[in-house]
Length: 250
Ligand code: C5P
Image (cartoon, rainbow, N blue to C red; front, side, top):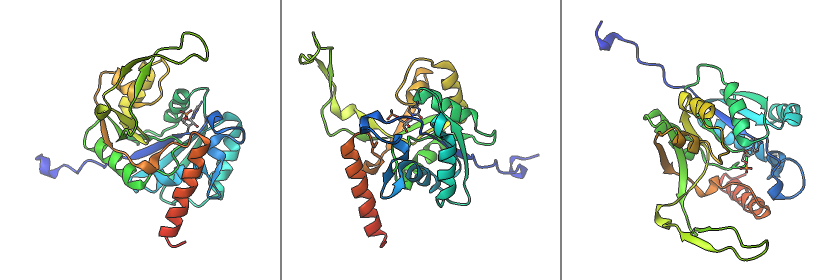
């Protein structure tokens, strides 16, 4: 049989895992961060919609606080979400890494590409999501969206005593640094093997793939994909939503 007569391979299917089980203590007291509202809608719903806006994403797995799983399920039921997308809610773990691992375990077998997206980045534009997916489809085992830095970054040593100024030990070359965002995109088998192999604490999934010795590539991130971490970020997020509503003619 010639190659021409073989059916074209099925396109890779993409699922998104959204870890949303953190308390978000840096935002101050109140509801778990993912359930706080922005423009009247919970941050988590913004994040879910942002990922489901990509036509390539056919499943979104939300990893919820274990005691809040039922609440998150009813939240998803109560908000309009695209019909072409399936949704699953699973309970999370003690660390972000554990929460992602639990999300991965819930994925049905037919998904070859996995995006991992922080619920705390509710406003990522769909073009950024699609750029990440495209780079994984093109063969990269791991892809991160990232931006150049505005600030100079210095490495410090611990202060000699609590409250004393920290001594600077190095100034990193800013032009070569990138601030990494999410969604991060992965070949599914690569991410599963990274989660099975790397046990120490990490702050993003791509660094686990780096530890496997594989190449992680960077695609352009977006300033609206910022992470809502501190109280001022809430003000910025509200402003972005207000601008979008104005532009969309709401
Ligand atoms: O704490 P940080 O801002 O890095 O959290 C990033 C994301 O990981 C958030 O969306 C948070 O809800 C999630 N997370 C989680 N399970 C944890 C801790 C954090 O899903 N145990």
